[in-house]
Length: 110
Image 1: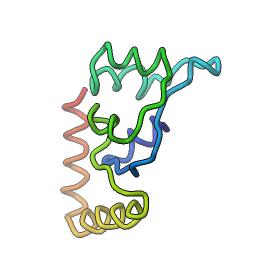
Image 2: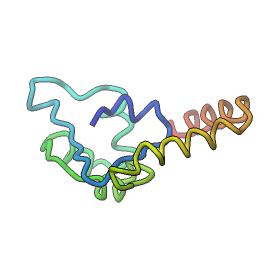
Image 3: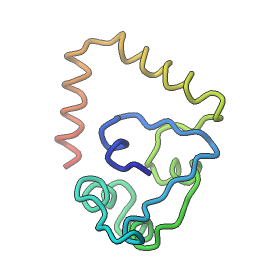
């Protein structure tokens, strides 16, 4: 999974067959400081974060949803449509309110 992309997107919509993992340690890299080492434990808990980062196992979209890493799981054929619906909905809101909300959530999430 592209942890940094997920971290900046705000909403995460994935398709059902999508497989996610973080295998950084198996290619000789330390997981990213931003998502992998600091935010992931807050999102999924210490033990689950260690499992994801140290074992590097693949997990499916349903599991990512259960972990709270994605906000919606849709059929692959509906992915672009669902992402566009979300984008269009956000685009109708006040840009100031959207920015302030995202900043407040980021600040209060640590």
